[in-house]
Structure formats: C-alpha cells, structure tokens
Image 1: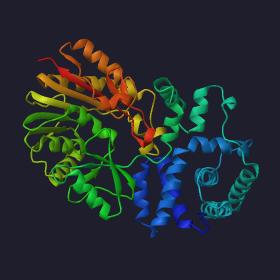
Image 2: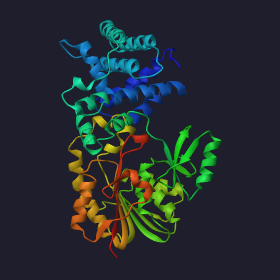
Image 3: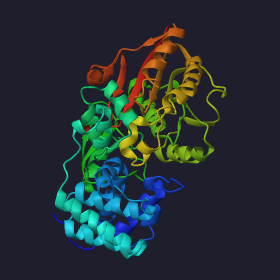
Image 4: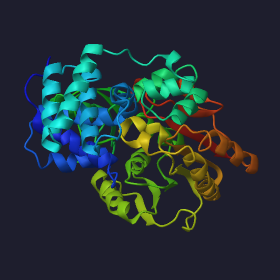
Amino acid sequence: MTVVAARGSARELALAVVRDVFGPEQRGAQASFDVHARRLDLDQRDRAFAAELAYGAIKQRRLIDWYIAPYLAGRDKPLPAVIAEILRLGVYQLRMMRGVDEHAAVFETVNLALHHGHKGTAGLINAVLRRLIADAPAAPDRTDFKSENDYFGTAYSTPTWVAAQWSLRFPDVVEAILSGINSAPQRALRVNRLRATLDQARAALAETGVIVRESQFVEESLILDEGNAGDDPAGRWALQGEAAGIPVELLAPRANESVVEYCAGRGNKSVQIAARMGNAGTLYCVEIDARKIGTLTETLERAGATCAAVVQGDARGVELPVVDAVLLDAPCSGLGILGRHPEARWRKSPEDGARLATLQSELLATAATRVKPGGRLAYSVCSIDPREGSELIAAFLAEHAEFARAPLPERYAEFQRDGDVLVPPGIAGRDGFYVASLLRAS
C-alpha cells in the first residue's frame, strides 16, 4: 500500500527522536520516542510510521551517509546538524522504506527543512533527493571497498569492527546475521506458570487476536506470530526474548532447591526460576542497582513468586549460603541485542569485551563459591564476544578443576559451540546469547 497522505507530525516525531539519539544527551531511541509521542495526538498508523522511520534511519545511518556522500562532495562546510538529519530521513524513505510515495517523501522532507532551516537548505535537500530518485544508485558492491569487513559494515550499516568480529565468529552466516539485526526482532513472551499454564495463556492471548507458537528451546516461551502483546497486568506472562530464557532452561531449577541468581535486574529470569521451582524452595535474587530493586520487587510480587528474597548489594561481597544452583547473568557489552536497540551499534566500543571480562571473571569466581558439591552453575551474557564467553569460561575451568561442562540437551545441537550454547544474533529474529552450563563435582 502506498502512503500518499501528508505525515508532517509523524516525520517531526521521527526527527525529534533522531536528534535526541545523536545529540549531546544521547538519549535512547525508545525512551525518546515514548516521550515525544505522548506530546502528539497521532493515530496508531502515524505512530507506526514515525517509529519505523526513526528507528530505521538510526540503524541505517552509515549506509544512508554512503548514499548521500557523492551529492555533498565539494561543499565548503557541513550541513547544519538538523538539516543533515532531515536529509537522512528523506534518503531512508526513498531508499529503504517500503510503501512510501516518492513525491510525498520529497515534499514532506522539504517542508520539514523549511520549518527547521531556510529556503536555501530546503532547496539543497530538494535537489539531493530528486537527484537520488533520478540516479537510482546501486547498493554497495564488494569491489567498492578496501576490505570485506568495510563492505559488510557499510552495506549493513554497522561499525566495521562489529562486522569483523562477527565474520570471525560466524563466517558462514555473517551476512544473514547482519541483515537480521536490521529487521524486526523476534517477539516472544515468557509464560509465568505460577499464574497460568501454556494452554491457558495461549487461549487468553487468542481472545485478543494474538497468535503464538511454542518455542523449541524454552518451555515457558511463546513466539508471537500475529498480533501484539505486552506484559500481562495479572502476571500471567511478560515480554522476554526466547534466547533470554535459555540460561534458566539449562540451569533447570527444581522444587525444594535453594538457588542464587546474581545480577537479577528487573526480574524476568527471577520469575522464570521461581516458576520452575513451583515456589517450593528458596531463591535469592541479588541486584546491586538500587533503581532496579523496586522494579524487581514489583515483578516478583505481581508474578506471585513467594519463594524469592531480594538481596541488594554487590554480588562479590554479599554473604549467601551454599546452594544447589547458581545463575550468573553477567553485565556485558550487549552485542547480541544490537537489533533491539537502534542506537546501540553506534555506542559500543571494541574495547568493551576486554573491559567487562575483568568484572565478569570476578563475578564468576564469586558465583562458584556458592555452588555446593554436585550443584549447578549457569553463566550467561547477551553477547557473542568470545572474551566475555568462551575464553572467559575456558580460563575459569583451567583454574577450577572441580567444575566441568554439563551435557547439553539434544535440541540445542544447532547452537552448540565447544560444549557451550552460542546463539547467533539476528537469525530468525533471535537475540545473540552465550550460555555455559557447568557442574561441580560431588
């Protein structure tokens, strides 16, 4: 369907978000969108248009600038920041956004430039966009770049170092990964079996037009195929990516066990653990961030997780008993979830993995001391950087002979890498995750 109606307010919203993300405050795209959208009386269609335009232009920034560069060559000075952002939004509509009428895109983008600039800058934008339509430039070609990773970085709009790391990690599917993180991420819910069975959740969702299917990898996970759903006010389900449920799946907490969860955050995995335990046993949820403690407590209460106790403090210094199972979902670079956060790829550094590995190693050493003989330890990060995953675990096992890798379930064969689980980001819309499942000798 072709969009022909003027969408000035929607484009203003998209521009406000982009300016926030790349402005001095560097706000998050989703947070910025929510703030600005509340100030505008837009219908659902216009909100969706604005979100696609803003998030897409943020993700595709490097590729957009590659398209723009030939048309601005030779200018004595750069465009004013707001005009440059407006031009990027126009290029995104013409080159990457489906269903947008070219003339409407040019007309509305020029009007936006007139509102934020003057006739000269609006004329420049008009000329560039019309030349872009007439030239219909080809997409980036490998032969245009000095290296394959520069090509990957430009064609899929990521930093070259990210493309290089993923090329080494996943040489056979790197382009599928890079393409995947520019597409819509997988939508999934984690059913809280303290409040509902999978069948009950599925039936309740179907009544609202939401069609789901069960995950092959996580018992509580339902993948959304049609419709939209958020966290259930009654605590029956909550938004949680399928891959994020794998650490608890492998930890396999059971009724009447004692469990420690380090870095509990806002409590998604906490509820998953408590439900697996059937509220029989004790779960210690450790979180250092005071801002997350309130959300964690509310999440547990809404879910009916009465076996859980919230412990605020640094995991490395909190006194806890020795338990049957420990989950450490460690702070990480977040390279596995670049597709969920439009601005994230532009805010990461190649040094993040090495910097965070020091903290992760300290946390893992602490976690190991809480596992009783014969107990279980699961370590996870939403990153596929080997410094935060396989290399860190290899170093840990070399120093802790009492621990060894646990056998992985057969269904994880496609994700198995050297005895651990490594989920590539972007494939089937999944987040990238690394999980090591360890056993302590009896």
